[in-house]
Image (cartoon, rainbow, N blue to C red; front, top):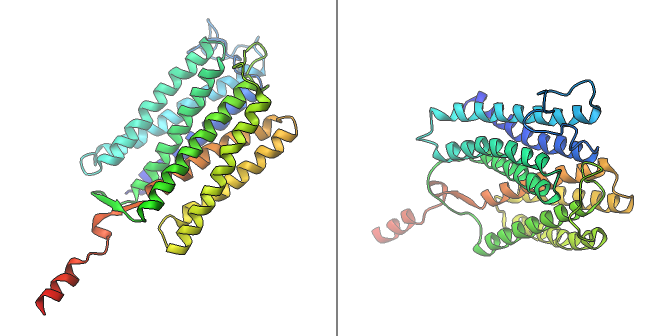
Length: 301
């Protein structure tokens, strides 16, 4: 892979994480309807006007970030185009990111049109998080040998890793529902999802603790067996530990916006780390040690 592609692939991942942070800033500062229309900021202006408040600048800044993400995704796609036949995996991932950015912009518009419906806002976050995972997968596959792959870990370990992924997804879903029931609606007039926030905080915590236990088991097993997932299970466990700590602090201090925003970004980073762990479960078939030479030598005697 060229140095230029590597730079823009990392820029794509970083920008996908950044737009989650800027989107969180929009919501947590009550700027969700700072630009009351879409795709323009007001019915008569593409950009914020002098009559609008700083909320408009925050919301418009997030929209500009969508443009940055899209440009970076397009550059990655164009860089991959010339090797699309040799690296169909990278071509597919770059296409998904590019198409996803366009879809994200449309979902963002629907979010504004629906007056920040909490379920649409939640879906907007999920789609952003999925793009972070795809961008992370691109980084992993960029340095991988193309072609058939096989398990590089015991089958039980693979199953446990996928179960951990499901628990992480469950944790994120309940986190989104909890936020949708809480005080940070994105605008004073925006509605809530109707669930009891206090109850959901506890329900959200249960799979979070299960995730911590499972990540610890994966790490210990990878260390004891010398598995290729060791480095990234360590990263996953570290992110989950920080995530739980931030969650506990924010829950006991009235959900301060800054901590809620950090919590949102950490969830995306945990999902990205989980993506890398899953991809490390397999290795190229050619790299696997083969028993055929030994068998041939034995038959020769």
